Image (cartoon, rainbow, N blue to C red; front, side, top):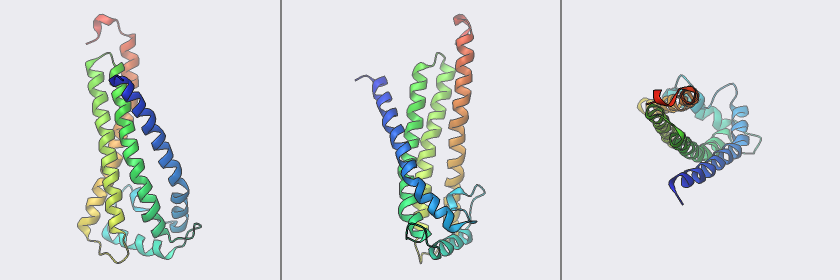
Length: 191
């Protein structure tokens, strides 16, 4: 099996896994979101969160039952974050493989370089989301002291996750536009 075929198979497997993890997590996320509303779970706070925010979420979520019979905190820690770890890895690899396949189709070294940059952004997204989930799961254990520097580390991973997924998505748009432009150019003008 050649490299292109391996990438295509990997793309299909990671695509199915991404959809599977997202779908499996949907009902758990929805149950937690309903139980803690109007509060948001930490990983969805674009502006970040402090130790106090995490403590307030933990206390509120521990007291709130969900429609699935567990407290919102238990469901969040034991289902949502664990499934999100699988989703993060699958989506990060899917993004990388998408860009590797795109690189194989690119007719320009500039476009190939852009594609690989965006692919690496996808990998960094997956790693930062995975790290964020691991840290949040650890910090939200009942009875654990949450320090400000712990919350800052988790927040930094949240911001990195948002930034790198945006780079990868923006990169997809730029890649598509550049591919269209380069196809329209005469072949002697391409680098």
